[in-house]
Amino acid sequence: MGQLTPNSGYIYESPDGGDTVYARESGKTERFLVGISLKRQQLNQEIADRQLWDDIRKQSEHNPALKNALEHCILLYHIGKNGS
Image (cartoon, rainbow, N blue to C red; front, side, top):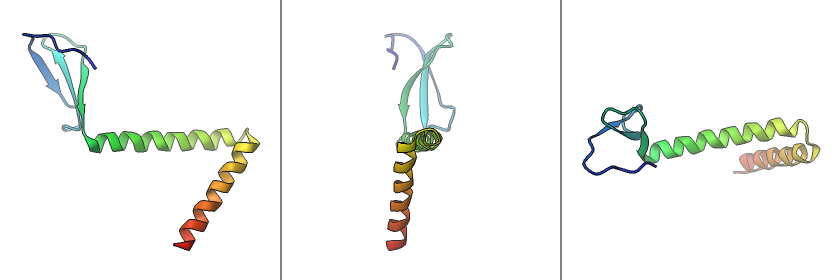
């Protein structure tokens, strides 16, 4: 995160209705993150998790050990889903 400069005027901007807030000094274009809502943090984590699982699936096409582990993971998921 950036540092606030004393006695400077700041403009606060949020491209997503307040979930993410940025600040920049008046007259400048460079901005820095000031805060992020819990809702946005959770969404960012969900996106990162989906990307990770997509990467794992792609890598498993070329890695037999990873493919086997992923198949076991899928099996355990279905067992747990059907057993609850």
